[in-house]
Every structure is written in C-alpha cells, then in structure tokens.
Length: 73
Image (cartoon, rainbow, N blue to C red; front, side):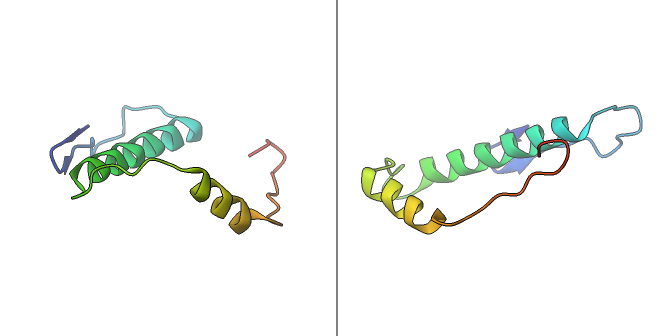
C-alpha cells in the first residue's frame, strides 16, 4: 500500500503463501503506482504518450529478440 510517499509492506512473510507470478504482479503494481504518483506531482503534470514517442520506442526495440524459458516466461 502506498500513502503519500510511504510504502507499507509486511516484513513477516512466514504465514503468507505466494507464487512467483503473484510477487511479480505485486511488484509491477507498486511500480505503476510509483510512476503514476511521480507523473501527477511533476511540474507540467502527466505527459500524454504520443505517436512520436511510439515511433521512437519502435526504433529502439527494432531487432530485439526475447527468449522465453520452458514455462513461457
């Protein structure tokens, strides 16, 4: 849970059963919360994702090959 600029996570995970996918989902959610908060606090506010940004992303990712393991990750 994030409140203002504080992140609260349980330190004792002994009784908690989570698989790796749940951990990754939690971390992604926390990261997206952080990005959203930072974007909203920026002096100019959030910047809309534009076609020019998408074109730059495509250029940067050209030729990138992602190899998956046996489980498809």
